[in-house]
Length: 261
Figure 1 (cartoon, one colour):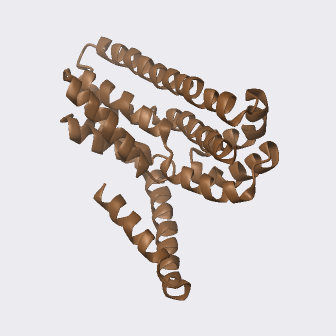
Figure 2 (figure 1 turned 180 degrees about the vertical axis):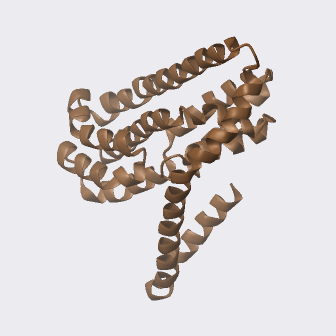
């Protein structure tokens, strides 16, 4: 969080400098950002091999595997419940937060909104990256919903960076699930910590696939849960990442429509 705060202050300070002075630094940061994203993609290509080896130990210990394989089926059933909890949570977040904003604030019919942003949602689902979906999201909101470019060019890039409702919700559910698997009872204070830290950590999450699960280590460390528990949910993270990215993109488009209204 101190890195995020420093980055905000530095960005604000750069805007106060003459354009000729600030542009070389901004171009340097743009290049570094592209390099980091390329590095993440490279790591994600080779990560499954290492993760598989690490998962074997964690799953075997938590499932109590030995001669008896019954623990593995029980663990698989718990994983199914975890995935269902995340998906249901994402659905109700859209139903109770985004749709009322569209109906009562932006005054946009729900079906019209969903038809307009469907291409962006499909790309978000397939790419798991709200950053990669950004150009399509902007086009859908401008052409399908009639939002002015002045609003989309400011709100949507900002939203792709800091509006990670789906990621924050996922991190909260994942933290509780991992704590439960380790038989750690979470107090009310720790649960409130999960909500706060997950919200703040999601703001600092990069808009690239798979990074949300890395940020989850911040949440687990804050409440005293072993971070290696992340390996339990790594195997099913990709489909959940696809679902939460759809919610993130839907939220970006919703907020942009509200701001325009």
